[in-house]
Length: 169
Image (cartoon, rainbow, N blue to C red):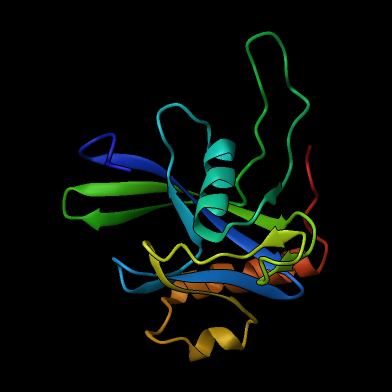
């Protein structure tokens, strides 16, 4: 998606964890290993953007992990809180405010389209590669993953695998 503002945009990053591994992509345009994610579009909220980006970039249906406060009322809908927020510079004149979510696949992810279930799929037009990585595997990625992204990957593996995250419906 094109930028919606010349100076700043809102984005989501989705760290999907399954069986002690985090899902990462090798971004074609940026030549970096990153989590799933992208821009929040004008007609969606951050949860919708995270679910859409996860599906578009991996083929997986995921559930976001986190707390949803019971504060709904007329004209209000509580959202699952991102685990972290950041702001990062894209160019000298443009920044992204990133909403960072933990997630897990709905059902058992499979790389085999002939099987029923949640099928892991490479978005070849956007990414060179997609893979599940353990904390140790992150050190072997080429090109090397940025330290900040590795920190988020490890934190997601630790918290999701350790059942420290709750699911909010």
